[in-house]
Length: 200
Image: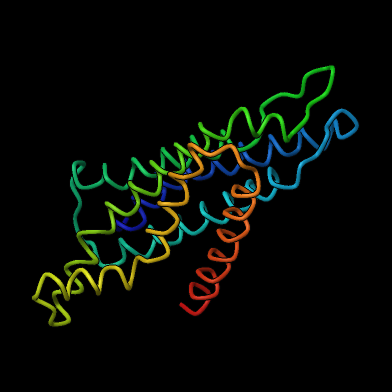
């Protein structure tokens, strides 16, 4: 078994549990549809989360393509973002629907801070895992000046950096229009990323 296969199996267990939690939570909502007052942002956020999970799994698969050996210490930085993604997937939809019904907008307002803290932590971890490899790649392409390296890195990571700033803002703001705009833009960004992944 190669390192890529070995890592993929373990990561796939965590990622699979995250997807299963999303689907089970969504199934519970549609089973009691009459008791749910729907708010489009919540299922849109769950769909975005599904795309993020698939993107992470696909990226992990390719990042270990040329690895011949791996220590536990080197694996932990990949494991932690997977755990953060599981916790985020578990948070974006309610686990139960009360007998007296559920207003998804009110539920989201109550839980938004928790959701976006997890999103901020998860994306930060992913970026930290990727940072070393991306800087090494930039240097290998002939950039040695720190300003050139910073510009090249920002050119590669501009969308993640903007997402990180947006997630931080959503932790503190209660204005739903801002939350809605960020989710829509995040979905568009993910569609753009997925279109690039489809090429490879």
